[in-house]
Length: 235
Image (cartoon, rainbow, N blue to C red; front, side):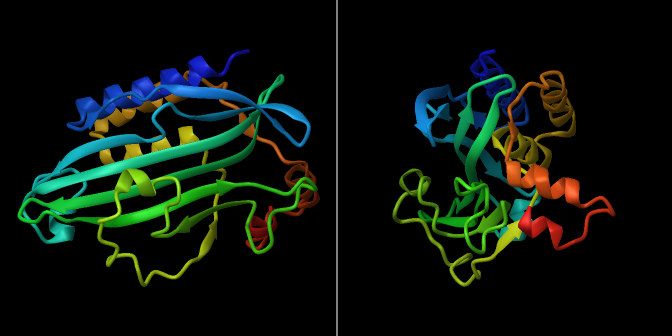
């Protein structure tokens, strides 16, 4: 099975539904480059140009209420999405590691400077033993102004005042791969009809690789009395 067409079809549908929701968005090309990871044949998934960008207008009637929140009448905001996933070949294909960076940037039409409203990444990674890195939940989100892979796309002059005093905290999450992040961006920003249309595209292609980690599988079977809140951190 070749997973590239499924990912590309999802990105194409995301771009189409985003455009119909009033965004300027071009479907980026999915790239799968062969690589070796811990002696296994894998593919590294990314966008050809690195980043998918959605551009929208900030106005008092916008679906997401940004104008009211930001305190200005008109302007532009952009959503940047930068994925890097390592996928193991096989039946089924499995995600061995995943980092998806996400940034929201806004610019007041009366100013020349852009501001970072939200910077974060969704992460899934583990050592060869299967254990997460020290103090890292296996699946987590982290709010940060230090977006390493997105920094070039955002530009050095971007204002960080809105996020500079935000503490660095890793939040345990469900696994958030590229399809999951696209879905949450669509839910928050597309019109209801276009989100429904995109959701249909996601549901009709249930072949995207799943995160696979032996430690995770073992520990989940040990919770036969039900999940406890702290179980999310170790898993």
